[in-house]
Length: 150
Image (cartoon, rainbow, N blue to C red; front, side, top):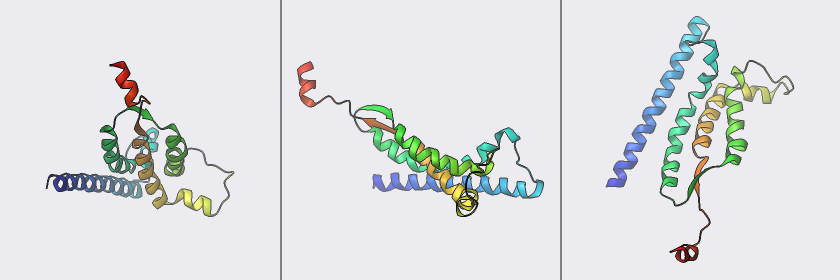
């Protein structure tokens, strides 16, 4: 029964965060359509596409909590960050970059990079990849080595 309540609580938190993120994005989008600008200073425009990454962070918290119970030292998986999180970040913030990548072929690649759905999905993935980059690694000390130290 306790596990059911824990999973129910996790689901309520996730749904709440998803609703808040969706509400924030829709309010900002509505404001932009009325006033043709963001409701915050231009220097902070890069934060707008990162709002969906909050959902990814919440989704990845369960993995982080599972890691907490493992033995070992906390480490940061740089490969996961470089090869998964950074491309997701690029897809997420591309339409809001002050410069455009003119060398990219105009067509499918450009449509993918500027698609609103791709931007939101990659934002969620970016948040998930960042939080799951934290992991515990075994220190490499075996049981016999521990016994010898005692």
